[in-house]
Image (tube, rainbow, N blue to C red):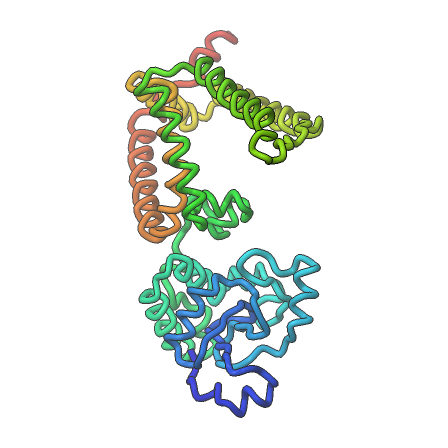
Length: 363
């Protein structure tokens, strides 16, 4: 982060800006929306946390090694927003440096990885880590340009799980569903989890059956609707207007095509595992099916479905908050598994005479 004395009243007046100042926070040329009352780094970090990267006004934050105002006006932002060049948390804007002329190139650069870490930290309100990361970047940015190619942040160069390069939010689709899964809206996400838990308790602990549940639910809805429609005139209220629900044909065609594609992929994978000579994949599939069969013997299908829902619903946000630790542990586990498989392959698998029976059959 730069020195705060760059944001004095004269500079604000020169750029025609109001008293609320906008800070520049290290790295390339990416526009974020941040307001802060003065120009010290702590307030800039607090603004970074509170603003959640939305675009409320003219003060914008530009990622660079200096403090100051951006050269773009509000009209520019509105134009970019209408062109869908401002999406969700960050504004993708064209930029060009010696490293790469594209946004994708920026994210792949050391500066881009640092930027993504700052974004992730601000989303979990970890101001201490943000401060440490910025000071760490300050020390590394004071060196020569050639040093920028070196791994100034070892964490940013770690191998991500499944070879992932994008953020967790982007991998999950980047829309409202990703916001729900990552608990951006804690009230909505908590309500969904509570509803699913209540339904699971009804079926498992109280012995409710699916058909009984559906019938009782429909009875309740019909009774309330009937009483409301016929009793509204007695209390001087208008009867309810229920919207006409017509399911689109395209929706079911899309679902059917998606299901068909997944089934074909599963059949192709089954054929490959059964007929090809990929022993490693064969053993992995056999082990996975055996583990699933053991787990299935412990729980009912509904309980197993609920456990899977909990893992899928809470796992991504846990991984996002502890990404570095999980990636490190996963990398060590994968390395250990590959090491054990190499020993098994050298001592056992390579000694199995695959072609003996086929050669005898030909003679």
